[in-house]
Image 1: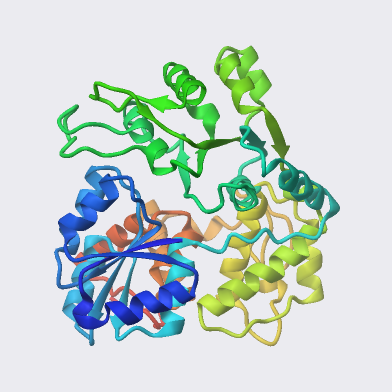
Image 2: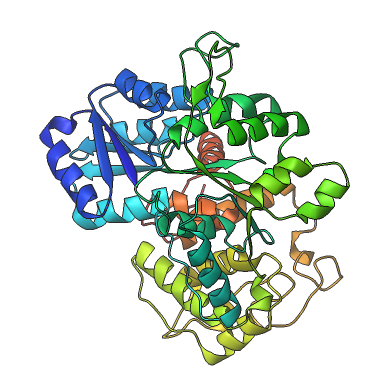
Length: 449
């Protein structure tokens, strides 16, 4: 993990860096916001930024957004400057960490915010076979195509391959081809020169140059526009790229791993994906089975996620009740591992007693308190009590209740709700302006307006 610290933190930089290094992070420190932005534009890259609240946090975050540099930001400050912490959170910081730094708190932030826990938990023989094959293909520099349904863990497997490769000392850089607008994808991959288009305020190196000497993951490659596929093919074949607005090619040395949740051969046959690019990417092929196809993974993953979110919320790690394990094993898991993780994320703060019982489990198409199948739109379904209420009112109550279940932790609540932390903060700001009391960290009782 690469950590960028922006600011001097009034002498606390040494201890904060040391804690991060002890947790396996590589640390770079700069004194100013502009120096931090320059480091990121230069392709140095980072997985997480920690910034001193005495600096212009809002300018830093807005600059990252305008230049499309995706990076979680955590604000840090000396003592208990509540106003500074609030300003940083409103500006878009994911969390606020008081200094002097607490070892456990820094460790939790590094794991929860930067999501650095990439271990592949498994027991089922089918998944074991996939990992064995992945370990065999990893040492090669050949392209790898990983396929599988959404939520099966394709990026985790890509990181596994990188970690077993000869490039493990280099950077692992991921690009979500489905999340970046088509008109910005070329700049994202290949970089741009200052002034090459509106908003290009400075030269910025693209993902190919950021990943130089390491691995570049092209996530959901099947979503890439066809006219960009030809430029990608040239970059892979010639091992050089052209920055947008540049006048000379730049040599690169990256290993490409691509993922897709589609049938790529059908995409090629239908003319949606270039055949020559498909063959270039599909030198090595890995397919991840869906969760229902590897049933022995369900209980071990459920226990893993229960422990993970108990620790994250400061709660006791409770075992699964026998009825709960049976309930989970019988579910079809259309959302795969991601759905199971979200289910356990919700269950942990909802659990009462000495075990995680069925009443704490909410599954799609299943009533949590009785384990009985129900239709979302039948006359006796869960929506009956919602008739007559506005969507905005229901959404507000869902957000507030989820936040309470997470003890006020914004990051965990956003994960459960399936929205970005920025969207959640904007909603909470809106509720506050409407005079609605919003739960604060550690709060467990529903506030009243």
